[in-house]
Length: 219
Image: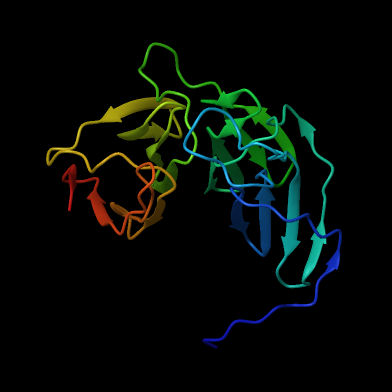
């Protein structure tokens, strides 16, 4: 306990990358997408960066990699997106594609190994296309914060009702933090999440913020 180790793995090891996502479902870690070079806070991908669209699986109990065969409508190669776990599904939102930021959302059933394009309920406002945002799930709601829309960093906070498939813009009672991208978001409990770090353009941020969804305030 309390020490790092490098396991000897078997199987088809994925190529080096960054700006990918990793999510654990049971004993399996799912890795999707990413890029071969750092994405700037500017239009499109970094010069020379290849965007990846493969789904790789790492069995933590066997230290084995695999590249599962999937069906359905899979995302195009994407980097700096978000991925959250909902039951046995992965929910991906946004990211940077070969044509720039996207607002696309996809679900992947880890049981059936099927991709589907998620279509949010019509008639409700929705977040703009973005990458470098962060996300997490509290109860049955996915929260998405910040990111970069191809022109500027963002500081908006959105809530996505996973059952009703409906977006809503969250208007915090205490005002919003400064715009940023590439921050990290982690749930604290059923009603609060933590946002740390990020970048507001050229400057790295040391911020550590808590949002209370019950009170509707940043702390």
